[in-house]
Length: 109
Image (cartoon, rainbow, N blue to C red; front, top):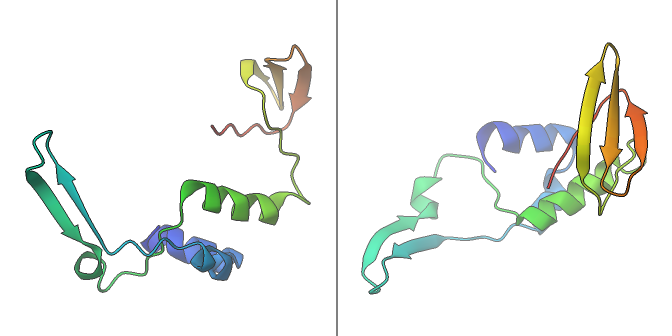
């Protein structure tokens, strides 16, 4: 997470919590099936003058959920079967057969 995303989470007040979950990856390399090195990256050099943190996806999701849970209804363990938008409402049918209407729907895997 760098540049715009970094500054956005900082503005939201999430940066200090995300820094606790920073993986701190310094280097990575990519190899073919024989083990031959195809590419090596040194992230310290690459991001020398860039604000960056590297949380794992689940760490970012956890921090974001903690931030929004008191303001937004979050549904887990179901998928959207259909979504029909009309004027100012979205009708959603979920995989458990439930149909509901919402002002805004955000889907994430």
